[in-house]
Image 1 (tube, rainbow, N blue to C red):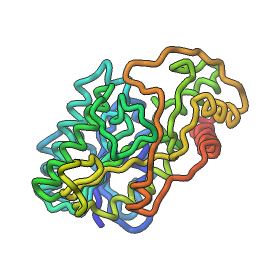
Image 2: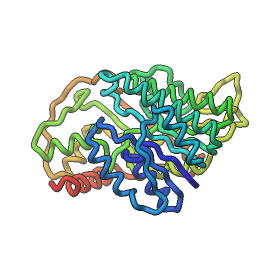
Image 3: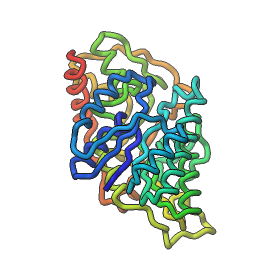
Length: 335
């Protein structure tokens, strides 16, 4: 297949692209290489793809309407993996317009490109943050997601609604993936694992929010990438059992699906920190702080729908995944 992977220089995008290339697909990677975090890390990820047979790179922002229209018209993609977005819950508190530009306008451009150029399937990144104020665990696709607590979460919910509209109106198969706290080698510098590892190795204290009373369904990057590709390979179809009278959020009479992709094994934040300490070989100095605006105290993914659809369940144990990251970090930064 010829696949467009947006955000190809990103954490998840690089790993997904590697799998697609490894099995012989043609990948057009798109990224704007912005400075939300150090662009050098993005360039180094990109270097792992550049030169491989079947890979080409386009530096472009998804919110560039004219540029995206040209790209779809020229390339004639079979399928699209849309991972480019303005990420981060906390960043959205100070920079809201960045989320509208990238996550709303950009997603609109992706949908229009798919609609007008015969794309067979759009798989796109949603987020566990859409569950927002919902405290019913584990989070299920059958639950409502109507109470976002950050603008980032609201844009991801909007993406799901926009995708459903295009699936309904134009029969475009779309599948959203609600990622749960992705971690692992080549991860983002604004994520807890990266921040904690860096601080511990440098002998600085780490900021532990909600006084350590956090629970996260940490999901290893290889599991995430495998899940994305398996979903891409099975385009969404209309659910013949859909009942408009009950309107189950996980079902539709349009070719639309949304799945949780998490480890289904939530870990206490203090246990996660302990795993980092074990891997690094020293204890962290901890600065306990209140829960930050936009954060939720716990996440836990029900992944039965994903397993039923693809036969896949994430499985990497957190201690091993953390150790893999720390080994990569030491090698990459030579520390």
